[in-house]
Length: 254
Image (cartoon, rainbow, N blue to C red; front, side, top):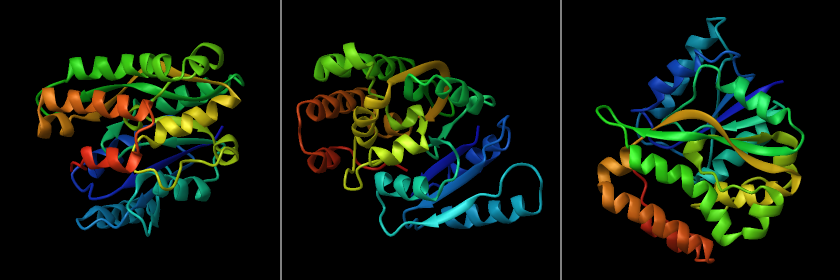
């Protein structure tokens, strides 16, 4: 089964070198790696182009593709990548998140079950000198209690889970396109919106494996502010608050 990895980027020069190193260790390797840049103003594009050049002279894995998006919005960028992808399965990877070496084997094994429409991993938030255990645990349980509180019918009868971007969302390309993909105009909570539409094809699974994500929001905002905002944004989204207004509370951190 072929897995296409799609990476939306915007000013990710600090994280991309590590991301590319870890992508090179994936076994099995992805069918393709598609980087969709939203107009980065740092060295992100130069780093991707260098990786393309190096991969072209090597037989270790696929040569990455670079797509330049006219819009710096993750939902729009991931849709561009999905439309360009050719793999049967799509795996949406944030530039500051790393998969385990056998991560794509987990993706394939999970989606082999026809009753499963999409999945994601357990995200462990970490920085150079610490691991955010409490924040990571709350993000884990939130994937269960959020749909239980706000979409109980889908939770009990369809197997809905609300996974988030740093948990590395994966699904079948055919079903992704059939349900309309990400909402292009959503600046936040785009994964939750997508999964609530994908659940009509089957349950959403959070697999019992860990990916590592950057703690840069917690490091910038502090523990209490970060976790308070995570909870606040989730509740407001659950009761139908405007995504555009929610985005104003949730600044980009690089």
